[in-house]
Image (tube, rainbow, N blue to C red; front, side, top):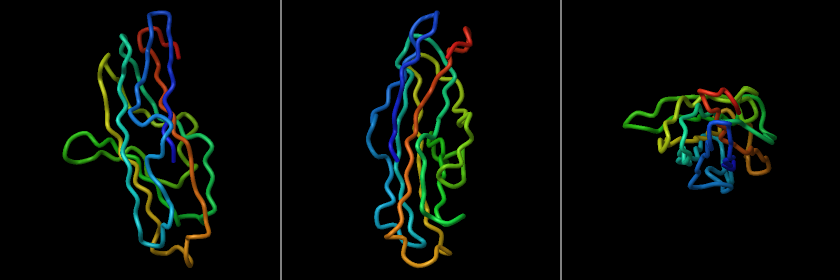
Length: 146
């Protein structure tokens, strides 16, 4: 899985996301066997001058795993107890994305991606592949422009 960020500009001024790991893998499924877990985190910040509503989009998802064999959990990792935002298979994030809420100018959030290969996965998963790209998007709330 790869993290990407994009720049969005509205008539009220720039709304820019900053991603400390832009374009790099945040989690991997290499050598993932039944019952194993991989975890990665990413920190996203509103580097613009305007507040905005952020969302996470899933792009270019593909998987050779069977239904229920590879599970993705995306959680807001602020604080001591992460808050689950999505639990499902790679490729099943809704087309409208996952709402991450309002980020004030300079606000930031940390998100945890957990990939689990089910104990019920048939045989070794070493010959299977799964992946997706994730992109952060923002909407300037006052103008409603993306």
